[in-house]
Length: 300
Ligand code: UTP
Image 1: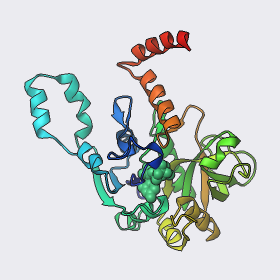
Image 2 (image 1 turned 90 degrees about the vertical axis):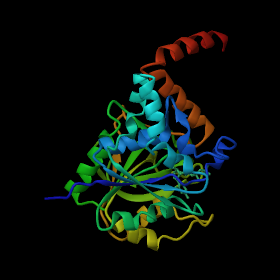
Image 3 (image 1 turned 90 degrees about the horizontal axis):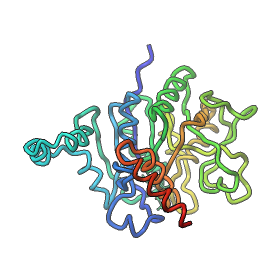
Image 4 (image 1 turned 30 degrees about the horizontal axis):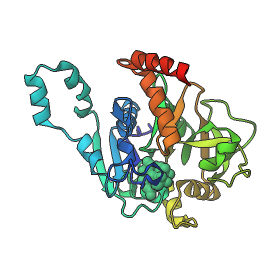
């Protein structure tokens, strides 16, 4: 019987320079999207996907992440004394549904390097990787990872990589993949034949962009060791996936369904878009945001 996949690596050590000054002293993964910091959505998604052990790769100026997931008996008893049930419910995420481990990447030498720091944690198991600055919005945000894990196990894959279609003119921002055969159908894994990290404008071979969720066999760590740094001296995860393909390992792309959307907070444009969409969808305050935006719309 195949072993369930229970471990995930969450890279959250990047410098977040595109979000300065907001990220001068706080991690971008702690930026609030609606009522929760981004990384809380990520951890909840992993828990719901059965990934009960998460290794968060942090770094300098990232201590707020550990504090956010640390229990706070003083705060809880103050809320209990005040009978503040609603706020206690908001802190329910602190009840251990999974174990969170931390390691530091200092200095930040690229996403691939951050993932390589999880080698000892993962050992000889398969694992998932979920970027700490990127959310999945869907009726069930854990559905893509669950399906990718199932596909990974069915296919005996070395990697299953979530992808989404992006406008070609935006492809230079992403890892872009090429697959064998025709366009993939959502939820159907297709063999990946190539991947290029942030292709220069106008050179992207396809509009299929890596979507911040991955499932790997331990072969990824061997590929990471063989991966050369890019021109900025960073080890890129996309380059390691290319090495996996060159090693002859089975690598698949898994296209998100149209109602499963990837949102990141990596730059202010995408952060604002993410915040607005989540605030509009908020169960408690969404109607007020909608009312506000309607009023504003008359002024635009
Ligand atoms: P980005 O590619 O957005 O890079 O990271 P960045 O360094 O955080 O941001 P800029 O370019 O300086 O604005 C995508 C994810 O990978 C993590 C980040 O924390 C983020 O969750 N990451 C990136 C690392 O953990 N280590 C790195 O060296 C780079």
